[in-house]
Length: 102
Image 1: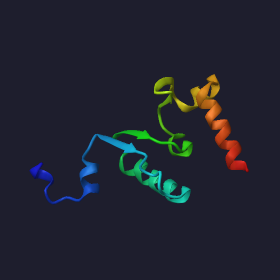
Image 2 (image 1 turned 180 degrees about the horizontal axis):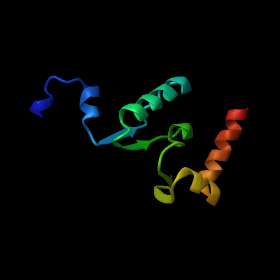
Image 3 (image 1 turned 90 degrees about the horizontal axis):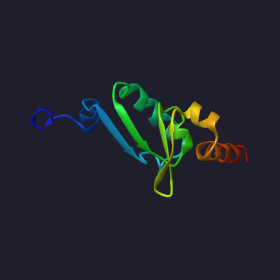
Image 4 (image 1 turned 60 degrees about the vertical axis):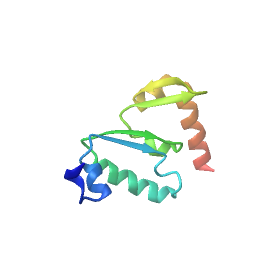
């Protein structure tokens, strides 16, 4: 990509239509995670962002969520719809909220 020879990684990512986050914030504290999520929302608002995460707070404001169980798709949809429907995603959120309150 000769047109991007002199740009830094962040500038390059801003030119992309797809951003893939593979546990990008797994090794940071919750406060840093939140700051990074705000930056990604602002800077990549016109991009498709695929996030693979273990922290539910990282994905709760996503447009769509694919919930996996034993390597297979268990649920797919908007977070609010998945919470209303019950099932694995709701169970995970309930357990996460209970853990956060302790």
